[in-house]
Image 1 (cartoon, rainbow, N blue to C red):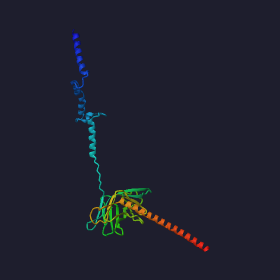
Image 2: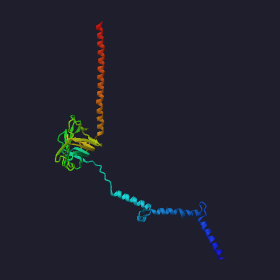
Image 3: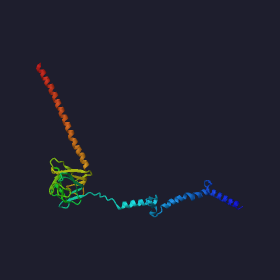
Image 4: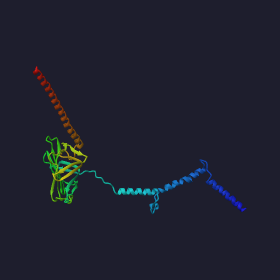
Amino acid sequence: MIHIILSKEFFLLWNILSTALCIPSTPGSPRQLLDHIYTTSRPIKTIVEFHTPKSLSLHISGNTVKPSIETSTSITSSIKTTTSSTPRIINAEQPLYRLNSINGQTCILLQVDALITVKFRTRLGEEQEANIYVPSDATVTGNCDTENFVTMSLKWKAFVLSWSFAKTPGGERWYVDKIELTYNSSDRHFEHIDQPNKTIRLSTGQKHSPTLFPTPVGKSYVCDEEVSVPLTDGKNNAVLLLRDMKLQPFKYKSNDFAAEFSCKSLSARAGRDETAPVAVGSTLAAAVLLTITGYAAWRYFKVKKVKYDTME
């Protein structure tokens, strides 16, 4: 009897569990709503809990890192901290060198990032190069007493970089007449140089050297390209590299740079200047050739006619 009662109770309990866990419910029924609340919402709640602040050490054990949002957040924070602790500093300002005249008015302005590459020979006969940057705190001296010729010198340690400016005969343009570099060969840049304790002067002032940076008077010469200027004394050689240069001598109106004259305009004008002589020369040669051909033809027919008349 007791066995039968236990079997009925077991059977009843089995039916209840089967009904609760296995029997599908119709869409929209209260049981489906309960299943939605107590089944699909738990993973969402668990995911949300991963976003709550917790100790990072709980997610790292040994060499195994448990992937979680907290771990990703800690990595992001670390990157930000590293970036903020090593800021990148960029100085866009170019060194500016200013020479004033006696009355305090600015006479020459030069803004440039300049590098000098000097070639030298060591005691072992090896060819070496020394790179010297023109510092922004170089001492500026010069002379602006004359109207058509001014000079400016940049001095630092064992080096002097001198600029000479002049005007064209008509006074319409200014140009760099000469750039000269003076240095002592015993400077630390020239390690094991074969001829120490010597004063060396290199310049552009050689015969038939091209005019440098011709610019209309009252305007500033501007060039955002790298300009290479060779310097030599016939034996020693160097190269002056001028980057992002802005230059103006013979100033008389203000203490700032005047209207800009681009080096690109100068290159275009130089191209036109080279094309014009070729065109004129070609035209002149063609005219001379036609003249000679016409004269030869005229002489041929005239001499032939004279001989024919003589024979008759």
